[in-house]
Length: 113
Image (cartoon, rainbow, N blue to C red; front, side, top):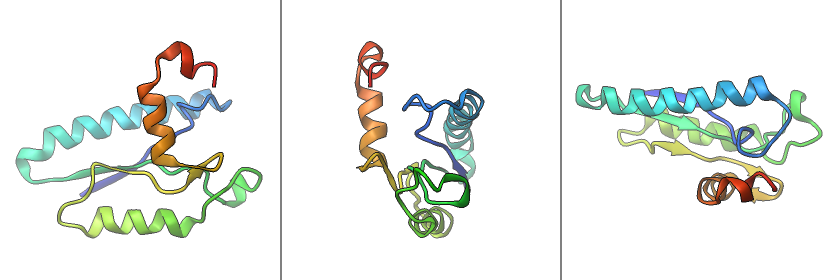
């Protein structure tokens, strides 16, 4: 089982262009690997945490690393892992909600958020 880390930063216009680009690429790679390796019985999951409280993210952290660890453990140990995990929060909202919102909104609208 492969588990990779994406980010909601790409969708929320945080000023980290290089970071956002690498996370979008990782998401595409993870989707491709999941589809390509399915016939071999290999499952691939993507973990897209929100704003996690770390030394690097003290000012914006909203969730603990434990929340992320629970999803990582499930992705690795489960015989049937989810394709995506969304631990944590972004600006007070669950990461899953933020990611879903940005996927559903037209670009012109999400660019204004």
